[in-house]
Length: 311
Image 1: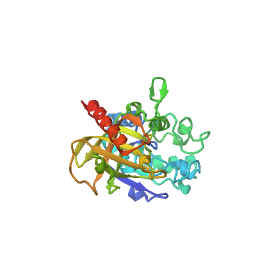
Image 2: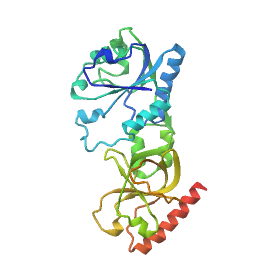
Image 3: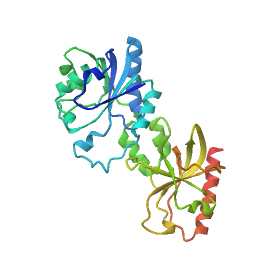
Image 4: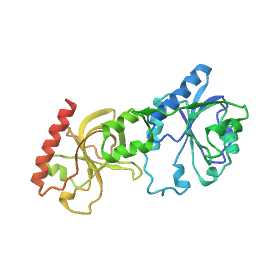
């Protein structure tokens, strides 16, 4: 897969000249609904003997339109994660467009001329709710008007689960409830957070449960605070683990939020490693214990539940 980064206005010489099927969307999470759209584009591309291209954005449009602050925006997937998922889905070209204020104010006709026709799309594929400007004049119903017969249009209807649309916002709500089974079901893969293993307070080691302290992106959407069954990837190997997201209130109020992973039957030093953490099942909510001994007793129970989950 070739990644092509675009900042408006782009140089046409930077765009591959071959004709493509172009799939449009932001695709945060690349969940099952998004996968349906991309797989539809893949099927059309194979039928027509064309390359499959996807156009997405490096930041969410809500930031430019002041619907949410940049510091408040949280993503289900980082850009590298999104790239890996796109490659997994068989995308040939991934266009990553910087969603700037200048780009945001393109007229619908200019957007179509430069970012669909200009990317040599013979077919444009999108979800039913895709917009490229104000909804009342730039939704999929208006696209034929701007296309002027220069490319085919394929619109993919919503993907539902138990009667409700699969959406990034719905998955965020499930993460906020700690409902990893349902969130992972809608994603189509285990929810994963990446980060660098850094030195912490080493308190877990003193308790008999040494942990990898994972420094996560402030833009990552974390599951609800709690203790979870997890898997942690170091290099190419996935290890069974239990993970904690919380403030360690047992040892004092007002502490920094941390993500700490205890890897079962693992005794290596992994400081400085970039790891991936899959979140599989909520064991319990975070609790402030009365003593370290009380916490250790509960951690033993958490470990038993984790081992039982994998067994």
